[in-house]
Image 1 (cartoon, helix red, strand yellow):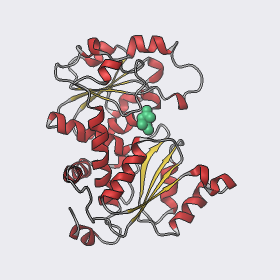
Image 2: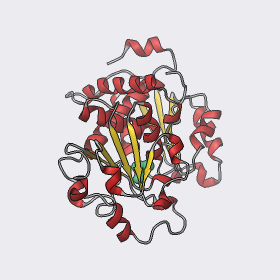
Image 3: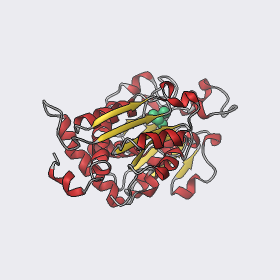
Length: 315
Ligand code: ASP
């Protein structure tokens, strides 16, 4: 990889994305074995530094590291010296002095992983920073689409929901556009950033128009933790206008797939039945999350002491 750190999809070229997806396909095969473990990162240490809540991302980075035989350390701010007023950067420097091979960072403020990367010698992977980016989510979404549709190039991807506050939307816009897909976003006008079309997407306030001809429909959660004040009249009205259910999915292509990064608020952005429908690939996304994070750890943590050493133990 050209970059030492994985901070956002904005920085990745198409060739980088293809390399990560291809590596993840090898890693998926490891997950299908009886013994789901390879020695690729034996002797390497991966630190999970999560300052914000997480279920899927944190667990899958931990499982990914363990499947590659790395030692995984989970750092929890609530039981750390951050409670004793140590600054984030001093905490990061302290962890760096223990020579980790990779540090995974999640924080509620955009830009924190970059600030940490600037003071660390280990590669930093952004596991979600505020409303900025969540690159491994976009990569696992692309892996899922590639698996379901056989390609990404030329597909139409419609992202529905809180575009303005979603790091998943931003990372997916960069990623899917770079891989040749048409990307549409749909939301109430207050939840669409004014400059979103400069990212090469088309913005819709009519859900029906946004869904027409879509191959992939991605629903997003309203990011309540980042909303100050009122952005739409009520959850009920939001759901009545932008909530996805089986009837509305009929506006999209017959074989359209439904995605969601989780956690799902059933009955708000996705109906109960659509969440569990045949068209839903939500659990495949979770499964692919482990493969993508194995690929990312292999490509970013495995090379630090020389690519040749990592190649030798490639699964
Ligand atoms: N899990 C995703 C994130 O961390 C999406 C969400 O929370 O709605 O951004």
